[in-house]
Length: 189
Image (tube, rainbow, N blue to C red):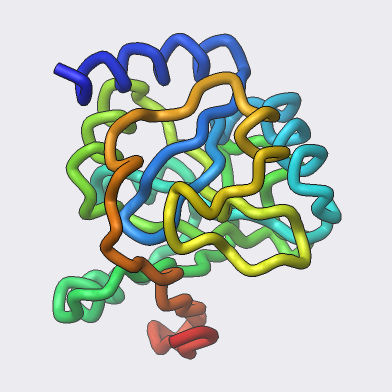
């Protein structure tokens, strides 16, 4: 029941332009409606992060990628499906997202979530959710909920209860940039 209660509470906050602190398939993240420019600005302010450093979005399904990017080559999915670690792909020609979320070159990082909680949340919300590590800019991302800075916890509108006691270490995703010729470059293992 906690899972559904968390999703319901998150939906209220996301719809109102607020911030959530939630477990992802990698580290704990700060999230908001990826189409709401004011909500995205709140994350930059909370993290003391320069707005020129873009953040990524999470989607529940591969089919949604075409709603948020003009990328034509999608054979990258074959690669993603073949590895167990979560993968964030940098796509060109971002669209239908908050302008302050998109990189200066027009690209956006997208990860298709494998985590059940995130998938349910994003499907229920019907839009992508921003995901950025739950640390103040310049500090390493916390590996566990208990390591998250009080400033971050106090700065969000809702903290998900699900997985707060989880002691399984998680790491950031692999990051890949997709090229025009359907090849890719690994930016972070």
